[in-house]
Amino acid sequence: MLIRRLKRLKPIWKANNDWKFLFSLAKQLHKTVAELCQTLTIEEMIGWAAFAELESEEYEKQKEQAQRSSALRGKKR
Image (tube, rainbow, N blue to C red):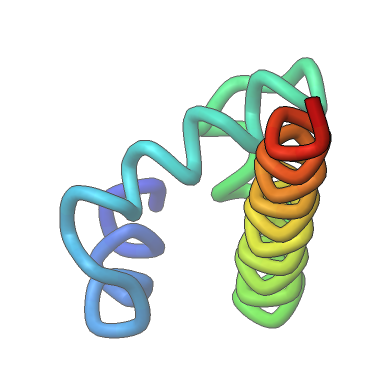
């Protein structure tokens, strides 16, 4: 059953990022990848993937803003 579900997911996600995402989500939820594949719907997994992408974008924006602020403080000295 797991293999069948993973094969269904394959066209939805890119190969290498799929596994990284699945293992990352499993770690966050304290579950195994097999448990995720058996319990989450495809829609939920896609939702989690979108959420992770938004979090990553927010982190990058905050990091860039902090770097800009730091650079401005350095110029004032």
